[in-house]
Length: 556
Image 1 (spheres, rainbow, N blue to C red):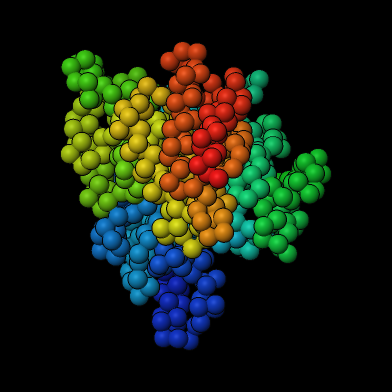
Image 2: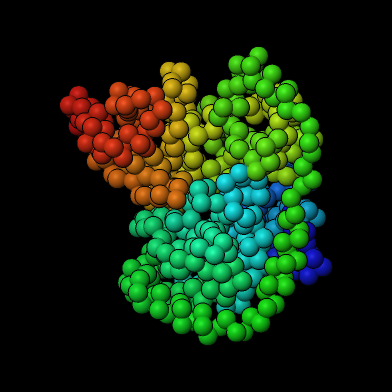
């Protein structure tokens, strides 16, 4: 992984010192909260429903064991013993005390981490495929390009006060695990007819109150033009984007109001203008960055122990069936560690669990960890002969839940339990759904099914692209949950379709149960997934199951 240069180290330390002084002035009263607000947001510090919240960047989701240990120590020392992993591959600490924030930032700097640009109208944390550098289907590791974008965008003088926040995602695989079409800019690596590597550039995506999928603005961009082209897109957006209405300030609205053809024309013109200014300096930097992402020294060893464990231990086999993915090296596997044990808060990991994950990554995973946008932790390089020992270590820490990709592997935002913007609870709904289907013992029979829950229209839980999406709203002071069906965040991304009237808090779990039971009765075969069944039949049979006469009567 990338290691800080002297410049990086000095930059982060200077920001810590600067923000420490600003906090001191706030505490002594020489800065009002209104004056302090833009300063704290530049450094990832929010004021939530009950306390401050510090959002820490995990660039493209990559962590070392040393960094994970540091996050665990911060959770234990300065928070309530846990951290919350988010859909932008960040970690949030929900209970820091303002006087202690400088110590937290200093501890982060000690392990080459920070909270800069995790908030504000700027380029946020660049996210990437959580299997990057390991996936069997990968064209090339996208993380060097994500790191190039991170360095370029950090404190970029032109893009610190954009019309609205700006999110970039990059994947090196044709199978999109980074939800690129739901981002302001999505970058999907591919090869052209000549076998050259480049990017399909997608622009104008985003969820929130006006969900839109991005469109292809450049079918093939040579990798050497990446930085200049991304700068061209941002430059055009920075010029055209609305600043009179924050609800219409995202690039998706700019594209909608200006038109795809005109936006594309302007981007290409700006790209032609600025491309000569780069002069190869970005490519020299990229070469240095790429060297930092050399693959680990994979070892060759017999894998017979893995096959033996699969045949003898049904608990291990169930975990292997759901939590392992193919690795580019045939003797290795990618391990997704679910931090969504049934009834637990999606995305939360205790300090003890984080310490254990760091230790297990050092012992079995070439000291590499990833955070996924689906709020799980990945060990991307585990030799198959170590999987049984790894599983045993995870089991001891309560981290061996075999549910990745299943109905209890739910994405959920913090909702009204923490967030000042939320209009409904998300966490209890996710917990109740997971517990209900665990009690029914159906989730493995149901198969792949992605439920995503947001506690307000800002859609931090990505509900629009859930196979089943749940949006919590406030209806005259009462929580109401709206359901969408058929969403997808893959390379075939689609926005889910609203089913109809919402459901009260105590009705939402039975409503989801009716949808799922309807699917089980409608599928043609056990291997036909929920999404495939929905795409085959459409919404009508699911609406019929969701709104039977007795349910309508009860709701009335």
